Length: 332
Image (cartoon, helix red, strand yellow):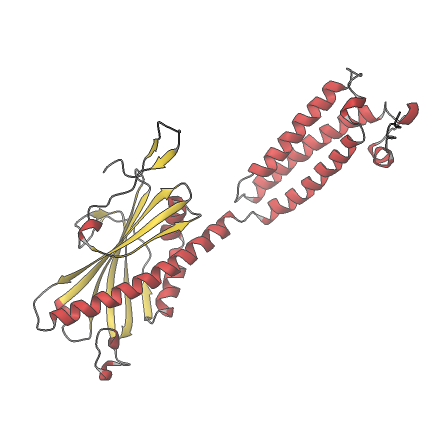
């Protein structure tokens, strides 16, 4: 379905619905695992897979029993996937060693290393907000290694505004017949399923960690926000000294306070909607605008404060205003 992940509008309640993504190649494979990951989007997946995934992926390979890992960088040369025949925009290769006992129950195989070769392809379907990641694996250094290879396909698609679904498909390819075909097929399937479940768990952990680190506010921005929030709170204290009812009979100053409230809302809006990852120069520019607004508010309040006080007393500065508390009206 070419419309797969495009949004549609429900005619009954105007609810936005994400149509499910259908991958025709995945439907031809054995489904190993399907899982929904919340609090992320397809953009987060893309950022992890094509920009910063090498560290976590190499770490997972090592922790899961692979040694002497050599993982190349993603290349942007068109590459044909060995299973589906599709042309992918990104590819890389993996070579590593593993214990032969993974595929061989013979006790003598324990501790003996074999070599794994893998070609990975990846592409992002922007129309459907889906990412496809494939792995074609072959081995050498063990009996009947030239008789088979495996294909794994990850289909990661956005199913809600803040959730993605991961489906992992698997296929065993018999390159040439051998008497151990059934045993190899069974052991390869078990190994693939166990590893893909482990990989998905590591992928989820790394994804959410990557999202948190990318969305963490710039330290300079946090410093600015702390300072500005303190200034805004101080301005609020100034305003509370002169409630609205004290100005309703004074049309001369009412526009100034209306203007103040607009500026205060503007500052608060700026604080709430400042970008998650902001360069230092942008932070400083934001701070300059915010403090300029505060100075304008301060100037307006100085004018008001200079004409107001308790029982006609003139209060000339905001510092004095901070010490001035209007008397509460006595009950009649």
